[in-house]
Image 1: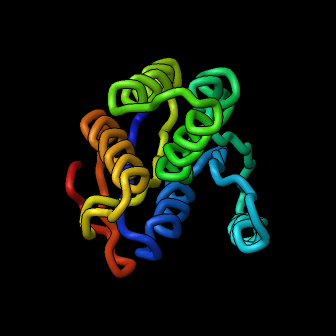
Image 2 (image 1 turned 90 degrees about the vertical axis):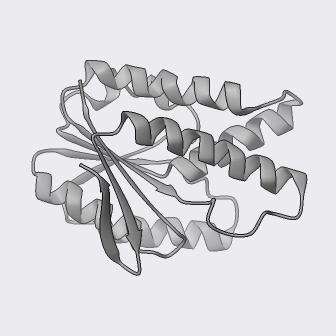
Length: 180
C-alpha cells in the first residue's frame, strides 16, 4: 500500500513548492501528475512556469485531468514517488465534465470517484503526495455553482485526509503538520 501525504493550504500559500521539495527529498524516481487544463493564455503560462520549475530536477510528467484511477498501478509502476498537483483542479475538471454532459455530480459521486483512485493506490508501493486547496476557510460563495464546488473539494479533502498517513497545512510558506 502506498504511503499517502496530503498537502493543503490556501491559494499561493506555498503548498506546491513544499510538495516538490518534500517529494524530491524522498529520493528515487519521481512522477508529476498534472491535472491543470490549458484553457486560456494565462493558464497556459502558469503551466509553462510550473514545468520550468521542475525542469532538470528529475521529474517525469503525465497530464491527467479527470481519470486518476487509470494511473494506478500501471502508469506509476517504476516510480518511487507520485506527486498529484492538484486535487482541487481535478474536482473542477470533473464538475465541468459533468456540467457539459448534463449529468449531475454530488458529494456521493465525487466521493466515489475519489475513493476509486485512492483504492487503486493499494497496489502501489511508493509514496503519493497530493496537493489540494483548503477552500473552506473563506466566505460562503454567493452562487450555487461555487458553493457546490467548495463542497465537492471539501468532500475529497476529507476523504484523502482520513486515509492519509500525513496531512500538512501550508500557510505563508510554512508547513504545519496536522497528522503524522
